[in-house]
Image (tube, rainbow, N blue to C red; front, top):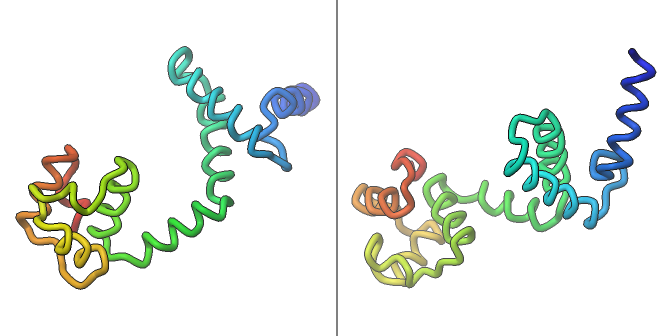
Length: 136
């Protein structure tokens, strides 16, 4: 059994190079494609968990991900959630007139000069379909 497991692992690393020690950007992109395929065609495959975990580990070594995480950790919780949503949805301060108010108020909240109010939190949670607790 041990020899079979070792051979299977070597074959898997050959087929999915991201699982090896020296992954490249191309290996990462191919692994993303594999995960997408597995999600659509074989979502219960144990390979999905294995590759997804390795993708996460690889992403956590990228300078831009490290910088983003450090920036988010420096912000108060609700502001970090707001900044992440803005990044994910490609939104600007001016896109929150209905939920928060003017662009300058949103900027002040993002800089930590003002806090999100209960009303802001309720409207943001409704807009994004998430729990208000994420902003607290």
